[in-house]
Image 1 (tube, rainbow, N blue to C red):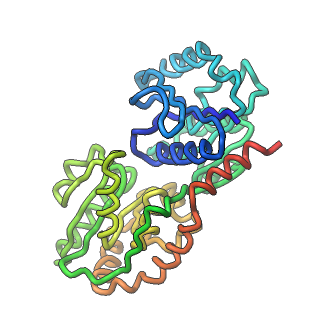
Image 2: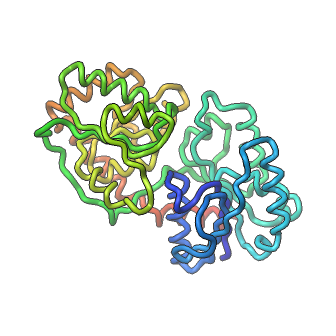
Image 3: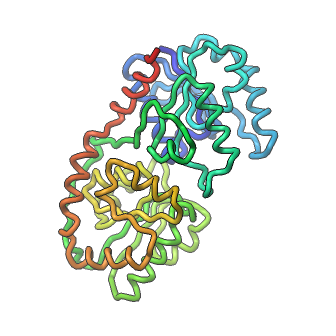
Amino acid sequence: MTIIFLTRRFHPDIGGVEKHVFEISKILKSKGHNVTVITESRGRVGKFSGINIIRIKKFPNNWFKKFHIWKWMISNLGIFRNADVIHAHDVYYWYFPLKILNPFKKSYVTFHGYETKFPPSKKAIIVRKISEKMAKGNICVGKFIEKWYRTRANFINYGAVDISQNSEQKSEKPKSGLKILLIGRLEKDIGTEIYLKVLDLLKKRKVKFNFYAIGTGSLERKVRRYGKVIHPNYNNKIYYYSILKNANLIFASSYLSILEGFLYKKPVASVYDNPLKKDYLTMTPFKNWLLVDSDSTKFADHIVRFSRNPEIFGRNTNLAYDWVREQTWDKVADIYLKLWSKK
């Protein structure tokens, strides 16, 4: 098949959607399919890992942006003419004019996450409903999307891991303080400020720890007061995995980061500050293996217990590890192929 993916961001940018599209594109290419990614991300045009990459100009995020993109799509209609499948990742609205021009072309959408603001705006819900109705089928990354965006999902997925990266570690009692690793955007919506309150409480309770964060964001300067911040990029993966391997406890609030923590047999702690984020974390098959809370004091209590006796979370890490090893990118790619084959 000839497949076109539409996505706002792509390799070499780092992030959950970026990794999702990159990994399934590589697998589909290895299965003999022709894959093209159309994206706003900066980088070289051409091929990477056998994937065709077309980079369109990144327009300012204002009311006129959609018209610039629609103009580009119509001007490049020939790119889509021979495609068997058009699949958008969140940005199905890019395809609106071509859907009108060719209503019988197979087009699909994957809904990833939410728009960081709570509650979701009426506009966001309406755009997703229009996308759902216009697309032939959809994949939702998280069951919470059905509840909060009123989406009828064809398939629900939570991402995957690369099991070749695994270096299984057992939980051992820290000898010189806990090694705590925060993974994710350093922004309010993933609970960064709550995590920092927890660190303040640990200091007050004389719990020794070394803190690292892998991410970027507007709260980076504040996070640096507590430990070291590493900017993620495609070239420092080995460094990233070495830090993950040596951590005792993971702070993570996004699916892929949580799953990677599971793969390394690490206890994973996640916070939420609104009902949607709570559903994001608890409407999952792995909810019982997470330490989830919105109360920083209760959260700190759990970590104090863990610092004294890491084995208390041993059963959870083992169950999470067994489950996550079955969550491969090949399986995710198969979901896409099943969706596209539905009549």
